[in-house]
Length: 301
Image (cartoon, rainbow, N blue to C red; front, side, top):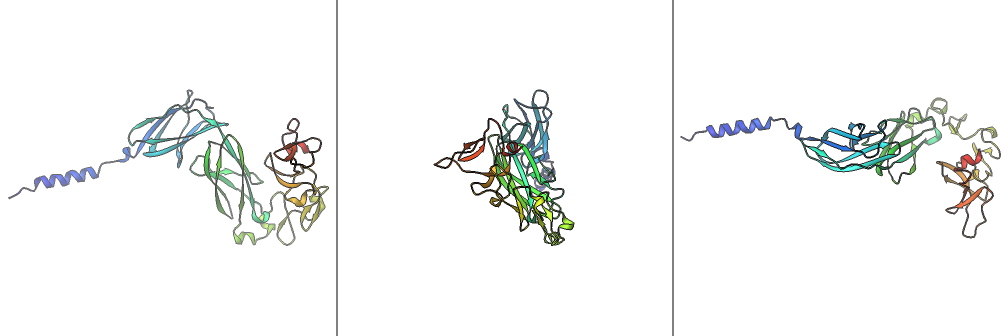
């Protein structure tokens, strides 16, 4: 008779192995050091695992625990103007020491959110997916400066009560600020309530028909603009704030200018007339002389 004891022991052995806790081998530990940092700001996390994070000590050293095994990327905010992203591979149950990290110039996103129909956005929030930059409150005008951000591409999600969430992909780099404009479309039932209940954006007023409009009379526009068809129109001078070409004189047009604003701008160069006093030709646009003014807003003051 052939003994079945070895098979029984084998089955018991396999069962015992199956009951082992493999959790320690599913994550590892990451150590590193930042060469430039502000201890009051510095934070190191893992892309896609924003709750796995660590601060830095007085020497710039950090330790991340429970980092999922496999390919990973560190999201590093070193200071208000320094950041970095570092790729690595984490071995389960082991420690990884990354080379010293020298953060580069950090970029920012200037998020500008408006609602279709110029409705007021209440309790709006911006989040950079997969990072610790989450649930950042928008101001009363729907704006938020998001950063510091290392070079790279990010999905930014915007949410607000009574508006479906909106997510957009955008990329930053070179330590520059980039404008991200987002339009939220209200829930149909919310939009039907009318502006008397929803409220209007700060640059709009509530019309008797329940819609948010730019103006009801000339007092909402300011000279030289006048209210026509519920919007401010007229020959705005060079560098005047604008929402469209209908607010600029014939020699200028409305476009985005430094300072994250829209202003009436004249073209220059290539045989066009020279810029007027106080302006210089910059990339074929007449903009305030940087020796005296940095933006159209400062020029107007």
